[in-house]
Length: 454
Ligand SMILES: Cc1cc2nc3c(=O)[nH]c(=O)nc-3n(C[C@H](O)[C@H](O)[C@H](O)COP(=O)(O)OP(=O)(O)OC[C@H]3O[C@@H](n4cnc5c(N)ncnc54)[C@H](O)[C@@H]3O)c2cc1C
Image (cartoon, rainbow, N blue to C red; front, side, top):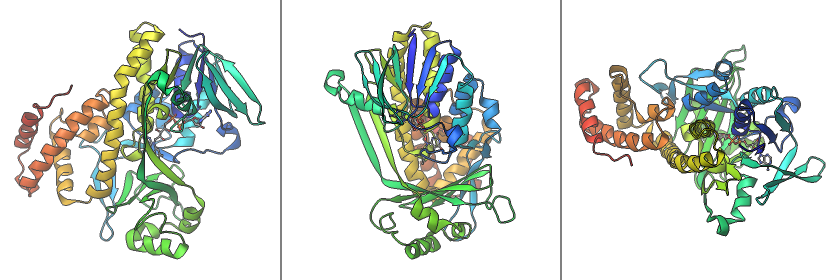
């Protein structure tokens, strides 16, 4: 086992990893480029709130924090879909009442993890220290502090948990010939902007708080997740350029007109829309895939640094937390043999993070284009009935979100096939009343058996 470990990035996955390694008695230094968010109250990050689900909860349970964190969550039992006109309707996430996803504040969660991390005498927290790069001969991490002073720290092992724009990964890119480093970074043609629906004037949520709200509009969409202060964080996803894009919405009147035409019910709840839209940054969405994740057994990428994904399955953080669970399980299995663990982790995990990256892109199109479509809605209803009736049946969404013991790669292969079969079945059975559930299940099971999970 390495005697001195550096983790670069005290975000969600880096802090969770630091806690787990400290629980194992290892000496860990956690370096973060930003100030301590608990002191300056500034919570910068990639989104204000997040959907936490079973894979993330399993990781929190591993470090003994699941119950504490769940107190800060708001359950979201389904998608509430807002058509342009007409009443919104709910599409449940699962046919089982005890399965839901949780809205949680990113800053609140990070702060809880940092508070826990601070309790370990073998865990050093170092804020305002930006990593500039890694010299893998040591390995030595190079840093710069807030005053501009540069310094170096040598360690036995360095984790890069420094997010989608990882500097640790960039240092690997510089050695790409030597490492045979394969790397892809794919931007989505859409970007996002965070807006707000405040609490009602006399208090209370303005919309149903136990749902994730979606306004699907074909080429673009908007979503909203509830916060504990009774507001909603709204995220608008639009193309960068072209019709109905961020580029086109360049003044207040165009923005208001766009909302009147496309999101009229939301507009009535967004008094600060114009200010929010023109003062909040426009965020980019990208998928990063790379391999190797390690350098000669001296360093390892983890979380978004290894596999940034688009947010449409609500799984980026969940997958990053699951990285730590998988690493931990392999360390146990290999009886503390660090080298064997790193090698096995990289070969086992890559397939699953590639799968969730692809599923997240699939879900972008599903949320944007299909959730309001009639056949798709029939399919969801059938899936819900199958889940309610047959204990073993799981939709693709359930496999990904509520079944932490099914690997993402397996969920992707089985789930995609199942989706195709369900859609075929629903095209032929236009009236839900005519559907015989046993027959539908038999159709799916018989045809699913033909798939090869390898
Ligand atoms: C709009 C949006 C919505 C999302 N919604 C969800 C969701 O609902 N559910 C979900 O599971 N996931 C969601 N995600 C994904 C989730 O945000 C990420 O997967 C998650 O934050 C990854 O955690 P991480 O610790 O790997 O990286 P990060 O959370 O990005 O943390 C990286 C840390 O490293 C620090 N750092 C960066 N560079 C350096 C440096 N050079 N030196 C030192 N420190 C450095 C950063 O300051 C940061 O603290 C969403 C993402 C976006 C963009």
